Amino acid sequence: MTQARRVNVLALSYLFPNRAHPSYGIFVLNRLKAAHEHCSMRVVAPVQWYPFMAWLRGALWSADVPRHEIIEGLDVHHPRFPVIPRYMKWFDALSYYWAALSVVKRLRGESFEMDLIDAHWTYPDVVAAYWLARRYRKPFIVTVRGHEALYLEERTLRRRMVAYYLRKADLVVTLSEELRDKVVGLGVAPQRARVVLNGVDRSRFRRMDQADCRARLGLPQDKRILISVGRFTENKGHHDIIKALPTIQRRYPLELYIIGGINPEDSFEKELRTLIADLGLTNVHLLGKVDHDRLPTWYGAADLFCLATHREGCPNAVLEALSCGTPAVVAEVGAVRALIKPGENGYLLTSYETESIARALIQALDHEWERGRIAAGMESWGWSRCGQQVVELYHAVTNAGVIGHQLPHPP
Image (cartoon, rainbow, N blue to C red; front, side, top):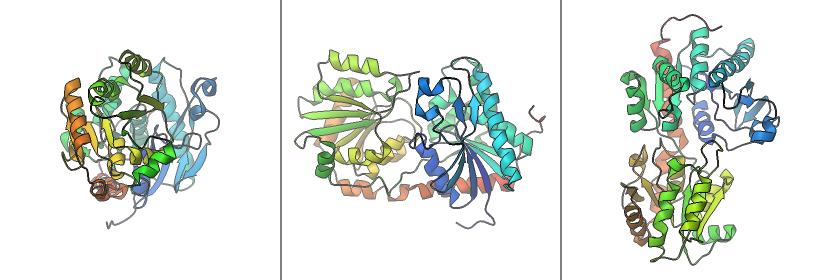
């Protein structure tokens, strides 16, 4: 890809790895790292702060997060922004803006002149990105990564602010056509909404010997192994997969391992454990969070990846599983339609009814998959493709000179 010059990008992201939590928002890091090969970039990843936060929330929000670090070649800054837990969420956007502004002023003093702002979440990122863009008269873009980022089920000021500031963005990037339709429905001009699918780290997620992977994880060699990766929330549909197991295990001896982090605000773990007990299942294992570096081994050990998610953008777990050569049975939502080729690398779930899910999983377990071919089919899905598409959008926005309406500077 040839460009007249390297664009200077200020990336703004609430979701981003740090020394205390290296896998948090890893997909944002991967995309920015790929884009960084074609542009100059500084990353501002503010971290929440309030008294006793480390005790209440853990190391991710603790003093273990440095103010500045270099992560895989990216210059990353972690200013603190004060929050009041559960209350006055409008204040988050204001404090987030001021935290980011302090870094931007310092970077400008060090001769980094940004050409545009690239925000990677909606709230509070998009609000801060807008006011920074207006202050310095630069364009800004924002990425909508999932339905939850739109807060459509809320009746709150936050939801209204997200819709308002998305309409002010010079460009809105979504991870699927489905999400693009949603943001256009919120009033974003269609010509300012583009789809860029996620990529996958092909150097990390690659095909490995299945027996060796099982031995390393201490898993049985004589059973079918299903794996699902996704947070323990109702939206991820883990309960739908669990309900189908009694039917499937009449045909196959199997074990189901569910990997996923837990967010106290929407945890569905208790309900999952109750369902497992009510069904008398002893072959379902809720593993919780697993180190990102160990995920390829889990994918390699599995006969099948399954996910009955109800809403998605472009699910990283599906890309990762396929890149490891593991066939996938996934609900037909978001960008999944672009990933799954029925009969070649998996099947699509078109219904959440238990019998329908059971039939699809049995069909996949009956099928003789060419795992090498599945992995090879992901060659073109590396992050470099995604990074190039993003940089092309950077140039399109900066060359157009679109900076939105003239509005007063923020306070």
